[in-house]
Amino acid sequence: MSQVGLRVSEACGLDLDDIKWNLGRFGKLHVRLGKGARGSGPRERMVPLINGADRTLRWFIEDVWGQFDDDYTRPGAPLFPSERKNTDGSSRRVGDDALRNGLAAAVEAHLPG
Image (cartoon, rainbow, N blue to C red; front, side):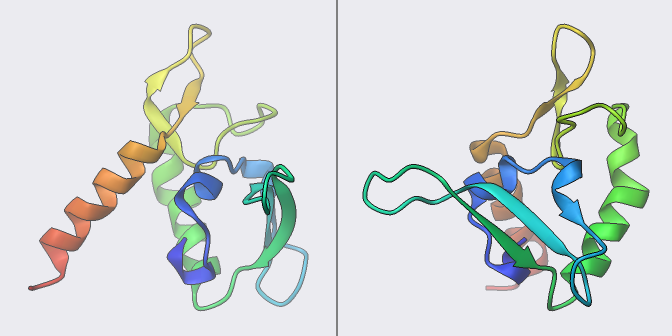
């Protein structure tokens, strides 16, 4: 999600329903839990899926998301699910640490130096 400038915590808070494919040329993400300013609380914003982020997100949803064995029609289904499950069998949301560690491992594996 670095292609569109999302913070890790913002990406972790996204639901499948937050993708608005019909808005704009490439679609937009509805960031409900954005960074607030000086204690004002989270601010909502719409983020355009530019720089190829729309294609990457479509690939992720079509080819990867379904492997987490969650119901995409469930309200509040996380865009980035964890391998861990809730007590009702639905997927949990991926945590900040897991996303940061996964990104660090991918950078080390794929980017020299």
